[in-house]
Image (cartoon, rainbow, N blue to C red; front, side, top):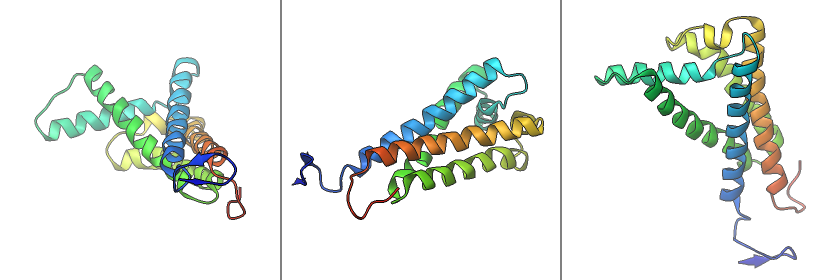
Length: 162
């Protein structure tokens, strides 16, 4: 343990905890925006449908046939895990807010551009330009939320900048 006037801290400044909290913030943000949007905004992106289609497509390849409900729950778990890990990366950089914004922009671009190429359809995230912009924006907001959390939790010192 080291001390620098802020009380005892584990060596490394709690980097794993910062990453976990940033990942949780990003995952929660994109999930909340998707759920709120799909319930209240006509033409909102349906990111959960991409996950459900992915699970069902993969399951069929191994001879399984999950119900839509079962596939939805598997997709929800996979999305939570993958988004959490993805957005946790923002905590690993000296400028976590910028890193979070970049990670969010990359995830948003992927959500809009990749589904047709993966055989998951166009409608969930590219039904219209407005739908695509919302999908991109939700992931960007999630990346910024992750970066903000990582930024607020990082140790302060001369070698850390915003």
